[in-house]
Length: 213
Ligand code: PRP
Image 1 (cartoon, protein in one colour):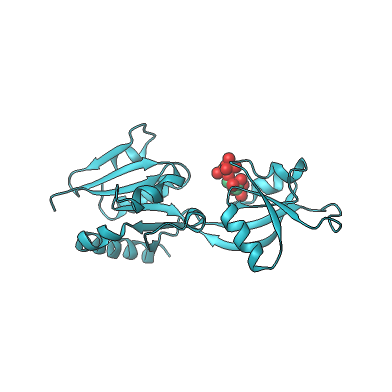
Image 2 (cartoon, protein in one colour; image 1 turned 180 degrees about the vertical axis):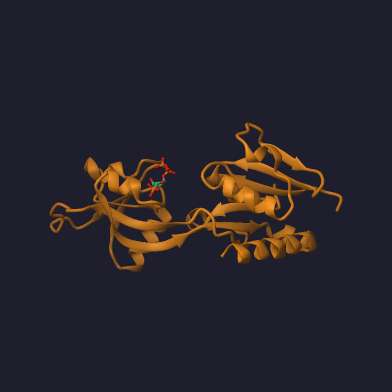
């Protein structure tokens, strides 16, 4: 065990829950438990090193081998289709990918193409293509719920966790696309080179997750 095993964590929403999981298998996450501006955090005792990146960048670090493993939402994996192994559902950051829109949509029957605003163009296109519906996608970077309210789109494809954002903006779920949660992903080469350590970590995480259910 002469090198640090590197793990990329997504900053934000699911970071704290993910850290709790790693702590519960004996990895000291130190400053990750509080608010920190540090981007690299090491636990020499377990030879683990965490790096903190934007959620959308996790898969890039893993895919290119800059880190051995990463924690990333299923939403991002579906959208980016990265070349890596998805090895474990960490059951945190649970939410749903949905189609949502106004409670009482205006008459759109005369319009041939439904306009969909989303941060997830690949996922949205795939979903509607499989339903045989032709759509036009407007790619946004956030506050997607606004789009149907101001006439930018008819509906949105977005994540719903508590449902508060939809409710407070007078939108409702129209269709469920899929459940989403945080996934542990592994670089293809690392899984071979560090197989023993990674397998041990997976086993420990599975045990903790089983107890939590
Ligand atoms: C996410 C998502 C919804 C909201 C859902 O946005 O895109 O807007 O959370 O959560 P809720 O059902 O609990 O209200 P995020 O907070 O990441 O911000 P963004 O809109 O800027 O992307």
